[in-house]
Each structure stands twice: as C-alpha cells, then as structure tokens.
Image (tube, rainbow, N blue to C red; front, side, top):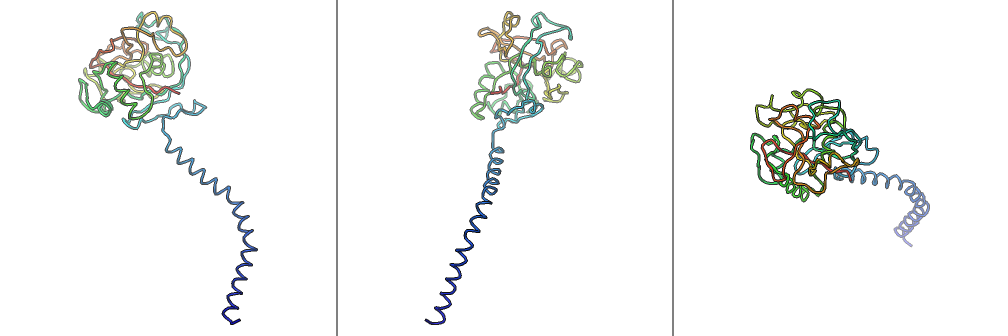
Length: 299
C-alpha cells in the first residue's frame, strides 16, 4: 500500500468517526431547537395573515374594545365608526323640545352593534361606484352627494357589494337615532345643544351644502347627523308601527309607500335638526338636500 492510499484511508476513517460520534449531538440540538424555529415561522405567518385580513372581519369580544375604532372601505375610502349596541329610550322625550306628534310615544329600543359611516357619502365616493354625479351642488368631491333616491341607493349598494364583497345597507331609523345620540344619550342635536357648532342649516349654510366633516362631531366622532343633507333610512314608514315598535332591532313595517328620512339639512329650521325628528319620502323622491350614509351590520 503506498503513502497516498494510507492517507486516504486515514481521512475516511476520521470522517466516519466524526459522523458516528457527532451526528447524535447535532440531531439532539435540532430536536430541541425545532419547536422555537417552527414557532417563529408560525408567528410570522400569523402576523402576515392578520395584516392581509380584511378590515371588515367581525371583531372579537370584548366588543367594548372596538369603541372609537374606524375602518376604511378600500374601494371608495368611506370611513366607518364602530357603534356598540345597547338599549335606549327612542323618541322625543322630556329632555328636549319642539316635538312633533310622529316622534311619540317614547319607547325602549335595543339595537345590535354595527359600523356606521363617519360622514355622509360624498360625491367622489358616488362617482367611484356609479360613474356619474347626480348632485345639484357640484362644488367639490368632498361635498355630500344629493339628488339620490332610496331606489338609487339600492343600485349603489349592489355595485359597491360587487367591488368590495361586503354587506352594506342603509341604517334603520332606530340605529340612526342611536348613533346620532351618541349611543342613545339625551342629545337634542347630534353632539349637544348648540346647532351652530354642530350643523350646517338654514341660518349658517348660505343655502348650500358644505364639505362633510367640517362641523363638530358627536360623542362617537360621527359628523353631520344634524344638518348638511337629510339622510335616507332603511325603514318603510307607518305611524302605527312606530307607536307599537318591537323592542329589539326594529326595521320598519313589511310594507308601505314611503321611507323614513332623518337629520335635517342645509335649508332646515333648528327643529328639523333634532336627533328625534322624522320625515318621510317616496322611494323615488330626489332632492338637493337629501343624501345618505351607510352601515355595515355586525355579523
């Protein structure tokens, strides 16, 4: 056997020795480390997954942690405020004034949690979905869209659903009043008792609409629920239904020729800005002082 062959044999023997005695050590080290390595990867994956998750996924309990949270709809940029459900005395009570007969009797109503538009739907948002602008006051993209009927809004919601694959609708008037009154507080106007700081109306509007969100918000950080434009609600209208409303999540009668309108507008007297004031219109009715905001029901 020559010297070169001897060296090769020694090298092979030494490598075999190292593998035989050190492989178990490395294997045991891997077994001990694997859970931590795998755990880090899982954590990273879960973090990425949560970042990719759609922001409209229903929140986890405790729901009170969502109070004050804002969600942004990705197609139009609409912002939504979380409103934690609860019970309140709906209607025009002792704590306010200028009550109309259709705001009585005061009755207890309970609503589930929901998301509601922080602002009225704007002309930009309507154009993004519908490709047109029906408004009388085409002053700017951040002005509320108006001249839209209850029926028109139905088409808007259908198109929005196809683009975002989320569930939207108009607020029921029980939800609308609950949100306007900062979760059912005794607020004459949406946010307090001084309309000039809270609303665009006949006295201060210059008889035109204004950009959304330029007046003070209410206690939930929602703007323009008093003034600027009136707002369509989901409900059909019936005097007897309101007088005998179910306690839980009333959504209006199953039939009726008219729909409920809330909120007052840029041309209104203060009495029509009140959070309990109710008006009605046929579903095909359009006007330059009438718009809307949307809700995302909690599912």
